Image 1 (cartoon, rainbow, N blue to C red):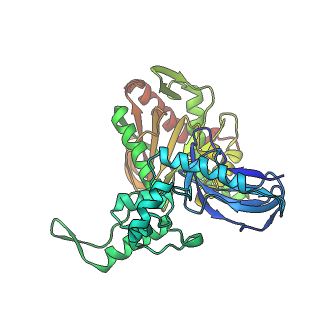
Image 2 (image 1 turned 30 degrees about the vertical axis):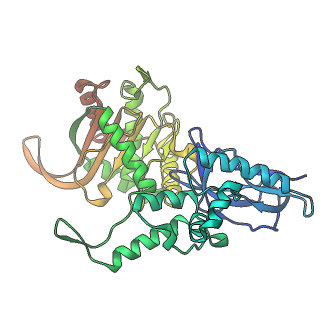
Amino acid sequence: MAEYLIMPKLGFDMDKGTIARWLKKEGDFIKEQEVIFEVETDKTVMEVEAQISGFLRKILVKEGETIPVTLPIAIIGDKDEGISKMIEEAYQKLGKVMLKEGEKAKILPEVSSKEEEIKVLNPKEKEKELKKISPRAKRVAKELGVDVNLLEGTGPEGVVTEKDVLDYFQSKREASKTFIEEKEIEKRIPYTGMRKIIGERLSQSKFNAPHIYFTISVDMTKAIGFLNTHNTDSQSKITINDLIVFTVVRVLREQPNINCSLIDEEIVYHKDINIGIAVALEEGLIVPVLKKVDDKDLSLLSREIKEKIKLAHQRKLMPEDYKGGTFTISNLGMYKIEQFTAIINPPEAAILAVGAIKKSPIVVEEEIKIRSIMKMTLSCDHRIIDGTIAANFLNRIKYYLELPGWFAI
């Protein structure tokens, strides 16, 4: 018996998904739990498995199209059973949603008789209106001012995809010199996708949460010596970043008043310690979260950090992998940045920015010595974290990092 394949809800706050790629074509036999398509959310691309076995009878939503979760995207069934009624009902549901959201490029293929009469009187207008284009491509074309009628679709059945719009936009920019305020522009890149989502979230954070910043210098000489000894004798390599995360977790356990959020006019203090690790990708910043890390030793924590960073670069994180953070660490030390300030990742109340370790002369017991110094800057939501709390937090981190003998591997 034929069944609909629906757009899955892959995260608590996911309300829409985009078909990134179909891995099967119409007529293929699909086994239960076989990967059938890839769906793109705001920050990741995920493979989706079929829940039943059968033939892929009809693909209802093309690559590049975005629809709400739980709506039908395909039909799986027996090879010869009738599915015309299911197709009609599915297109009605999809068409109503597109109309409700103001999309002129409807998934629904049929037009009303009144519309058809108008198009017959003007064949050119009919061809223009019925040009196949995905809703996502339609939105991007509108944002960039691209005339969709000039585009050739490369998607299934000639559908114009988002990539077609972006490629056309870029080719036109590169084909002619562009000037802004008498300055020649090399190229323009659309402000869309992950980069736009990140910008909107951080702008909201900066606008809503009054940021206050605190910087401290840490002597990492002994910590580096500890790592050199450990990494020589052990197969599990521990990094400076691992030590910092491990230390921050301990201090958060001691000072839970930093591990908080302002939610619905209430200050919420979190029992779990969930650390976000900022990872830079080509298309933007993503923050995978290490969950319930307060009772994990350094070796286990180090392995989890490396695995999350690897999955982030491969864009294989599940939605739950970057949700639920209570405190974030952003480390630009590997990029030789000595000091910076970071914007709080809402709804968290603080974020720690870690700079590069630099050899510097400092006074040690009335003598000038060369030591390995690292600067850290804590950004706090000043509505719920005061200066004294932030200062105590940073000083405690400094204390532990300068006294590495407490690390238990």
